[in-house]
Each structure stands twice: as structure tokens, then as C-alpha cells.
Image (tube, rainbow, N blue to C red; front, side, top):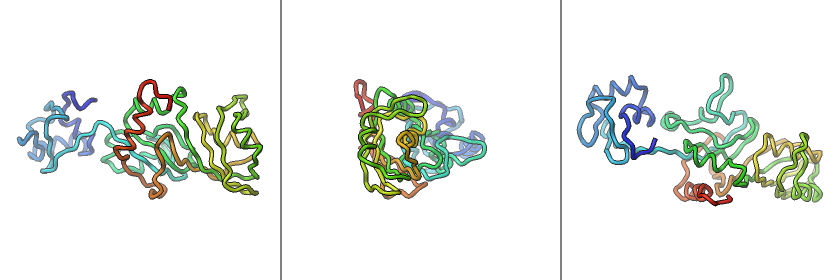
Length: 249
């Protein structure tokens, strides 16, 4: 909901991680919540987040309708918001972020590491994932088998996957060729298990995979697996540049 629309006070506080509706009702009853300098009387009070000053225990609430987080996804964690048996990426976040209901933009396989954008901005996520945008995604990979210039040329043309689909051209760079090769691959679409399937198409196997970038967003090298940070204003602006109508990413 936009910050310029009137919203229930208890719903705003719940989204900002101040507890359940019952807990927030208790905060209000104890006069710990103020709106424009006056104690709030009712949980259902309608306020304008963009205009009204909301304070909890003397701390002014910074209302943000959207959140943008860069996560260095670790291996063994699902790119999902919930799962009955496995840990998901949202579990790695504190409650103040989970309360804003972020979701992963796209997927990384369970055993893949690296850059994952988490946001609650559905419009931006839709455009980043749109096949029409061809947003580039770059990966570092370790390959079982010697990667050759013939493979580079095959990827440049687009390879035929096991189901008959021909991929869009990919940019393959050999970092080290040997029985265990190291490469950097940039693709412009996001088919299921695409990187692994592309190498399988040329008789190779991916043994380690890490996403390094998505569009203009680069993985922060200071983030260890499982760590995250909010995007800077410049990073958000760069992503929103892809979001502009007419942009081809």
C-alpha cells in the first residue's frame, strides 16, 4: 500500500516488525505509541505514513513501503519465502525485515551461492525477470572437464538443451582450463537450472556455481555467505533504470 494512503496504525506497526496485532494493541494501551506528539488512542486509528509522525517508545518510525536487500545466498538454503522442511532465504533475515514480506527475485538452486535480491517491490521484480528485458546475469563456475574455445563459440551461438530448446547466446570466458576449469558466464535469460544444463549440453558438469551480478547490481565482496545488506540509493536507482518503460535492460 502506498505511503500516501491512509492506513490503520496497527497494520503499519505490524509491517514494521513491532509485534502481533495483540502486542501492538498492548503498546497502544500503555501509551507507548504517539502520533504527531499525542498518544494514540485506538489500534484502528487511520494515519498517513508519509505525513504523520509515528513514534514508539520515543523512537520515530521510518516508514518504508519497499525494502531492497542484497543477500549472499549460502549453499543449502532454498530461494523461497517458506518451506515445510528446509531453510529458506527469508529465514536468514531479522524480524524487522521479514515483517515487510520480502521475496527473492528469481531463483538460485539450493546448492548455488551468490547474489540474490530480496524485495517487496513486485513491479520492479516483474520487470527484472521479464523475458523481454534480457537482464544479464553473470556467474562464476567450476567445471569438471576442460572448457575449450569451441565451448566458448558454442555458447556464443546458443546451445541446444536436452529438451530441444536453444538458449539465447551466452558470453563464456575461460579463467582457467584444465581437468577442473574455472569460468565466468553471462546469460540473458533464466531457464530452470540453465547454467548446469548449458554445460551438460557440451559434455561438462558444473561442480560449483556462484552468481556475481544481476543487471547493474554487483555482489558486495564483503558479504560472507548468509550475510546481507540494504541496497544503496545508487543501486536502487540503477535497478529502477531497468524498470523504466522502454528500457531493454
